[in-house]
Image (cartoon, rainbow, N blue to C red; front, side, top):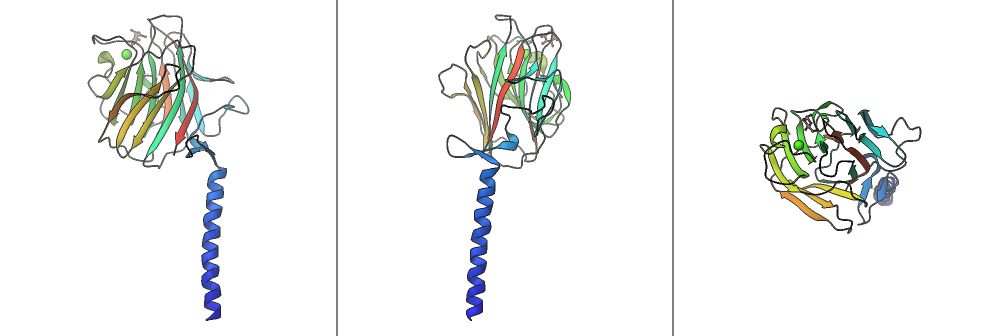
Length: 257
Ligand code: MAN
Ligand code: CA
């Protein structure tokens, strides 16, 4: 009887001990976010990016992308460039949020191209024609399109999102209009202050919000319910230039919860 009581309460204490250990461990490998949540370090890209200027612990980069101390330049302001940065670890969280600090800038006051994309896809590290990354992808692409290839009667830049099933193609000639699930116009180039976007996927609802006016406020770009995305995909950011160009820089990526 006595022994049982001891072993039962010992088991209970041991479970509590294991739980506390896991909480401490969890905190150890994360950074506390401003709203009290956690930012997973392995999904975050923050300064200093690299200890040797060549490699990053949780990220790969390729093509014309280059690391500096203060930003990752996906493309410079030169014609026909492309570059990307990709997380190495598939994400198994059902709901997530990703905040990207970016800077798109160049000599052209209105004429610049082509833009950058934020990805959550099955594929990674594959260059191609969709803002520097492969077409016919599985998953989500959010495109920051600075050059109007199509006939739309609007003033670019335009942000659009597309869900790919591995066979759908991004239509460059209509700036992705055919397969767009949501879009907004947003003037994010050549700003003197920091510019941010949040891509949020919670309860199968995709929302994109922007902080590009230097006010520290989020403004809705679009919200789309009923979006089905599997877990286990990779996050990445890519960019491309064509006959026209821009610098496409990423400064920070944070991923929650
Ligand atoms: C060329 C092509 C297009 C590109 C524009 C602007 O016309 O490379 O694909 O969009 O330049 O860079
Ligand atoms: Ca375009």
